[in-house]
Image 1 (tube, rainbow over the protein chains, first blue to last red):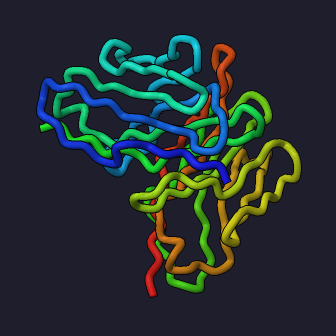
Image 2 (image 1 turned 120 degrees about the vertical axis):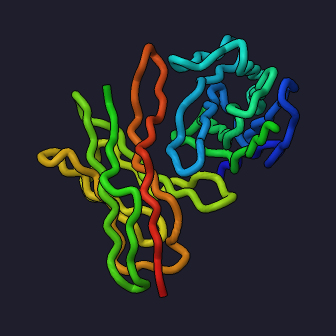
Amino acid sequence: GAVVSQHPSWVICKSGTSVKIECRSLDFQATTMFWYRQFPKQSLMLMATSNEGSKATYEQGVEKDKFLINHASLTLSTLTVTSAHPEDSSFYICSARPDRSPGYYFGPGTRLLVL
Amino acid sequence: AQSVTQLDSHVSVSEGTPVLLRCNYSSSYSPSLFWYVQHPNKGLQLLLKYTSAATLVKGINGFEAEFKKSETSFHLTKPSAHMSDAAEYFCVVRRMNTGFQKLVFGTGTRLLVSP
């Protein structure tokens, strides 16, 4: 089946630093990828839709300058949390939609802790 | 706009007894509905999906769900719970917005299975 990986699986950083999270589709191409955020014991909230070759589409209330998304290739999207603060601590999950088949496949998530 | 409501934040069952996880949807037209499961430290896994074909949908691991338009429901069931079914379950609707498709998650139901 289709596999999506995320790296790193967890990261601890100091307040004010930037953190980059990678999302890769390992065995399929994905023009469209999605980034979600999940707070403890809460649901997944869509942050943005990442499109290869064009700008990401952000959901209402998500700061595009704080959460930079780069869809560099058909198998890689990155989310950079700039100048991270403790309130950015969360579980970040990516999802990829294959170009040639239906479905949405999710990565295992990245747990971010900002001290 | 399409949305889903999961009526129970927690459901507790004994191993071997039936499972019922409730989900109601809101949509102005025939929706595409999904159930996903999230195990700790693992990516979200698709259990089953409804896309306007058969109203009774069979998924993996013995789960099934029935789309009932008259009740605007899409409840997830399993005849006999297994310890490995303990996880977080999300009811999800696919929404079209400004030309993009995206998944909108319910708040989740945590299934607890006791021996």
